[in-house]
Amino acid sequence: MRFKISLFLICLLALSFAVEAFGEEGVVKITELSGKVLVKTPSTGWAEAEAGQPVKQKDSVKTEAESLAMLQLPDNSTVTLKPNSEITIEELLSDGPVRKTMINMAIGQIRAIVTKLEGPSEFKIKTPIAISVVRGTIEYFGYNTIDATLFTDDGIVDFISTISPENRTVVKGMLSIARKDGTISLPRAVTKEERDKIISGWDIGLTAEPYAEPPDRGGTAADIEAPEVREESAASTI
Image 1 (cartoon, rainbow, N blue to C red):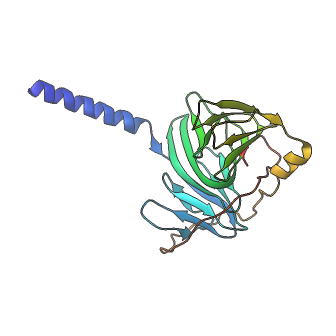
Image 2: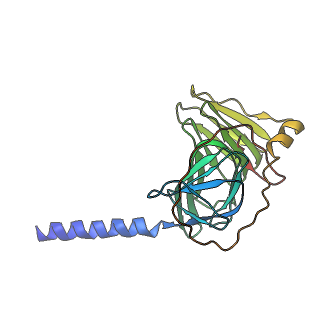
Image 3: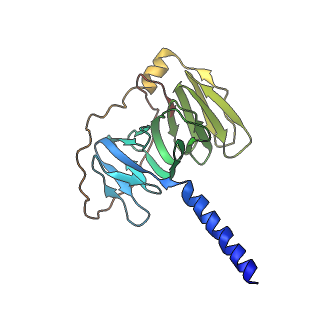
């Protein structure tokens, strides 16, 4: 009996060591913002954000009308939110060069500029109808509760339905749309005019100053449109 208990404790300790070994939790920083940007933690309501403010795993960020925010991840990847967008940092773990990032997108438009991923590293953006799995790229991603639009400005992105077995690989210069019925359109090349529209309107301009912890405050939600990208390698949801 003692042997069984000891063995159980050893296994438990090994498991807990393995969980700790992977997964130092990272911290994201809001490096730039304009307009009204809100942050919510698992234990607090929505509060107005400031440039330089840290955002942790399970925290949510929301931009209101005429507002933008840029988040910088520990590996220097960036995620920019257009107006009326909301995301949650679902997973943000690292173990040396291996990184795992999962962003849940409730609504809106975001641009992700992701540094090159090594080995089993993952960077995912998830909506209720589709997931984009980035391999180190620039992507624009938009979700409006009816469909999710992905444009890859550089690199390769796997676009996977959460409703059906359907999936597509979206390469540089291509756009694909995932719909509520589980279908994902064949990727197609965008015109110069379409690309110009997608990649415009992402520059913010207000850089981070030293952040001071604010008092508790409150806040609310948002809407959508088609995204825009800037000249760089990229993948996005529009």
